[in-house]
Amino acid sequence: MEQRAHEVRLLEQRMLDQLDKEAQARKDFERKMTLVIEQRASQLRSEIAHQARSRVQNIEEIEQSLAVDFPKIQEQIIQTSIDRQDGDNELMKRIQEQSSQLLE
Image (cartoon, rainbow, N blue to C red):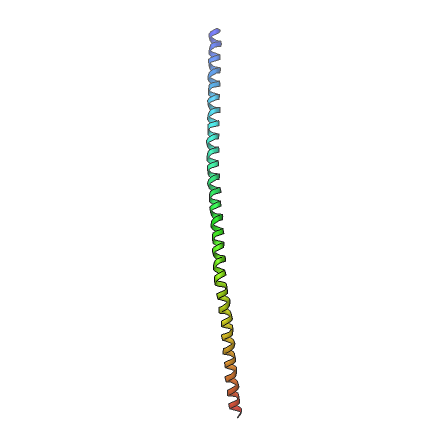
C-alpha cells in the first residue's frame, strides 16, 4: 500500500513537472512571438516613416519645380497669345488691303 502511494506521488510529481514544462514552453513561445511581433511592428513603423519622409520630399520637389516652371509656362502662354493676336491682326490687315484693291 505504501509503495502504491509512493508510485502515485511519483506519478503526480511527473505530471506536475510535465505541466510546469508545458507552461514554461508556452511562456517562452509567447515571449518569442511577442518579440517577433514587436520587431515587425517596429519595421513597419520605420518603413511608414521612411515613406512619409519620401512623400514630403517629393511634394517639396514638385512645389519647387512648379514655382520655377509655372511662371515660364504662363509667360509662354501670354507670348503665344500675343503672337496669335499679331498674326490675326496681320491677316485682317491683308484681307482689308486685298478687299480694297478688289473694290477699286
